[in-house]
Length: 408
Image (cartoon, rainbow, N blue to C red; front, side, top):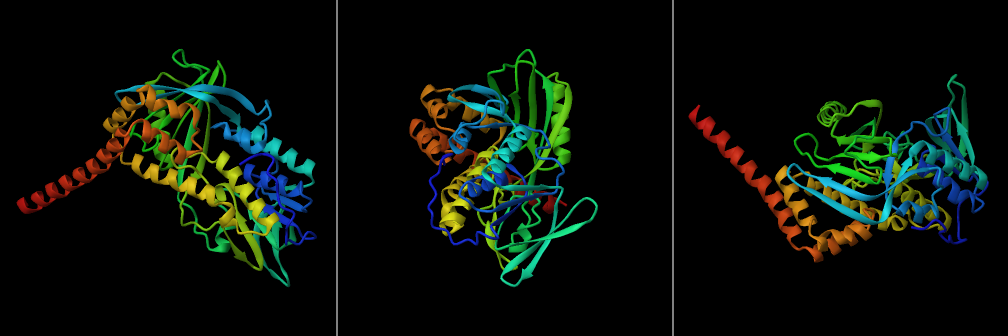
């Protein structure tokens, strides 16, 4: 995962037709840049009239720098070198060896768009994808503008980068991804906050995921959560803001796909080879529900596959392995109670345990688990307790219902 990946010159794609990318997302534009800089004809189509919106404050690991080569300073609105974790009864502070980046999504997308165009890619906005059909030796893709005027574009290779509700994914038999809901409020920085510290709250009574405070600056912060649905997100965030004395000046929200190791990321439709990247492929870390870095990683794998004439599954193997580990961790964390999180943070407060979190990023789950497990084997006991505790609780509920039915 580096910004200056050395591509092989071996390539079997039709350079006259080139590659059509549906969706001017970060992943789609990065794929466009990687292909265009190698002389491939690339055309990007997006339904939006403007490149960039909606705005959203994001937190990413320093791996973004490694993928892009260097992230422009005007995209990074802040850097936070400290992570403060809260559970119902505990708190823990982790000092990061390399600070997390706070980026503005809209600025990132616009920068990637300019980079793709400077490499030679064409970007067509206000063009909604309406379908594709076979046409001799290629597929014919249909697009429509806001006035209903249509156009058709031929392609043998198509990249779907059109988000969680991808219109292209069903064309290769990829079922729609189940989704979670992200909602966050922009607030004035509270007196108990810090511009250099990101804060996380684990509160399984209100969300299986977590709440966060991401500092944009000394004056502003984004406070939000991940929830199973929109109604839960609205209610939980409202109560959290009230509890902490925070007032929203604006809201940002998005639907985020859940990663599934069984989901298809490539296939054939109407005679064209189709690759899915980013949210369209649900390339999202389910521990944190972050998809910026992993989406760019997916775009890189798709570009490598096209340029080398190799399998996308092979090029994306490392990414899929990483995402599967995050999924397994999420399945465990979804069973945690507030008490389990208390136990977890108690262990994190030991310096030997928290040290690996300081120099290994959240985009290196396998390495992080290995180092933390070596530093503190009792993490396995906390996990086992959470898993068994849920089973015991479930059995008790079943027995209670049986007793009630017998009494009745």
